[in-house]
Image 1 (tube, rainbow, N blue to C red):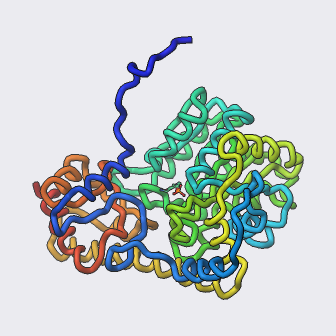
Image 2 (cartoon, rainbow, N blue to C red):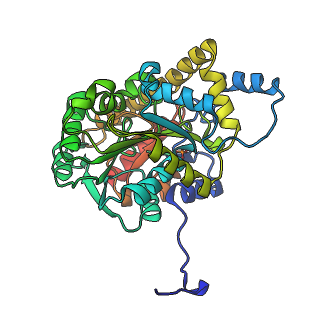
Image 3 (cartoon, rainbow, N blue to C red):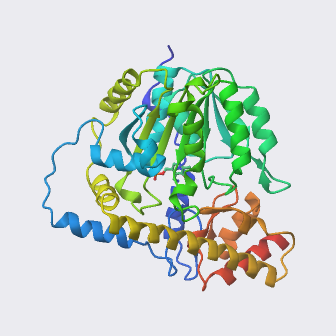
Length: 415
Ligand code: PMP
């Protein structure tokens, strides 16, 4: 085996969103605008602690809890509540769904990839093109021997979801290959399949006997309705793994669901998430679950307390859960409002082209269609920061800067 010495390791660039935030922070221009990192901001572009989270902090403060280790799988009550939120209280009771607490969505994705690499050993992993850039890195790090195949997701000329391209790519999958899916608010494009399209995607995945990994980072944040945002996951579960589905001749070989609480609870820095392992009804769930537990022991030993306590406090209390329901609606509605304002401002100044996609997309981002060079000019000339692929985080916009951003976009489009 080739050996390397430390001095042979080249300097790597910082991950793009983090580099962008650092550049934005260092910019002294008073009207700079940060449309880079995927974090929610209120109308004044400030971080927003959800009222439900503030109330839960209050409850926790008065509980005087200790700081003992959690079990390897995490806080049981949190896991139960997380599973109910994702699958519905009724489906969550089924014993073929096993849940562990994770280090946010990233930790859930990493654990899912590690589990597949060690115990499923797929030849290929299908990842959408484009996707959240960490998917590539996570799968490369956890399973270097697994070939990454990119399935088309975005039709650049039509600025729409490339359903036919995705289906054609999945048709080439081999049994036990993994497919990574975004259940709602696809990052970065903001285009989701319709329910009819999801049904066809499920049919292909079942027939080809693939292994499914759902990455849910925006439940409730996308539409304001957590049940609606979990529709695709519940559809896959009920179709292939629910109690009545044993007669299914073509189920996927298994399913993992990554669940992040970063965006929908605004708990970014607390790093709280969950991973759900689903086995077909005909397969005993226990063996696979114990293998997952062993991986957690190796990577983090056991997860952390605070985020689990906050989420559990909210989801165990009817009033706080209702407040949280209002909080996600507040965030989703503000983002939808910002979409409408940006499109209206662009059209008011007669920008070239069709910008209706800004309103058609859903979730935290708009995949604007701006080129790398146009994005560079936005930064260099107008002090507006967004990803090189044209992804704009909409929460950095508000009523006072949306006109400035629209005029800057017109400038780079005309340039
Ligand atoms: N998956 C997707 C698709 C995401 O957009 C994100 C957040 N950018 C994550 C996972 C991970 O989020 P976190 O680790 O902060 O929970």
